[in-house]
Length: 173
Length: 112
Figure 1 (tube, one colour):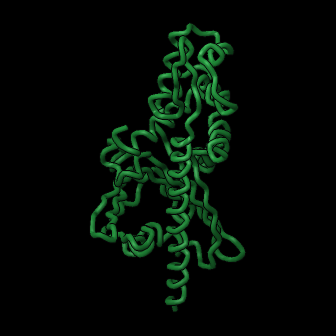
Figure 2 (figure 1 turned 90 degrees about the vertical axis):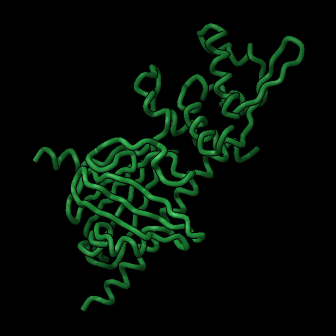
Figure 3 (figure 1 turned 90 degrees about the horizontal axis):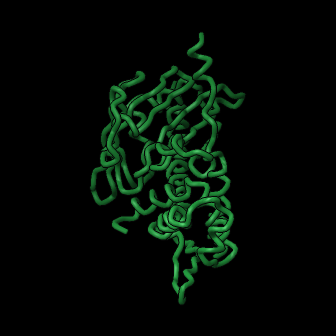
């Protein structure tokens, strides 16, 4: 199926803006999938302690709502709105906080917390592994400039490398 | 700058332009006057000055005028903050996935 072919291809990494995590865990793939896609499970682990996830809503289909509410140790609540983009059972889960349910764009103001000012798309891929399941989380961050990139003549892939170089320079100062 | 998040996104915007990146690369070697910074670029000085403005407004560079010569230098703090932001995102995800892995193992133990 053509659709499956397209979705099987992972997006290209952009250093400086993207994060990749690869884990192998000794449990069946179905269990990993359930942990990502069932509110009662997801609430148990999704938010780094001592923060908590106190509410979770999952409408598991492309365009479906992925909503969580995080709570700080001081009791402040931070809602996170998101939208699923791709749902392939036991294989691939993609969502973004740049959209809300029904693919409607969110304003930056609805993105949770002062840290999360960048939109992101997360791609979770699951694969069988001889020790259980291998899963990969790719987190792609956007930035304000990305919308302008298409207009910018002469813009090419140098940005990630340049950024890394600049950071390296900054560190020495 | 009104807030930290906004400043960071200005930094990323500033870094997205090839001319501005080249200027920063040059300044990473040391301070330089406008005339020297502009030399490699085939563009009118006012356009080039706008690039310098973008860099200075987001705090990546600072300038000082001595007589008729304006000299720019790199100020690394915003770059460090941009890096810190990514480091923090990485830490959040590492922690989240650690929690997932241990939760998965407890689920597995509970299963018959």
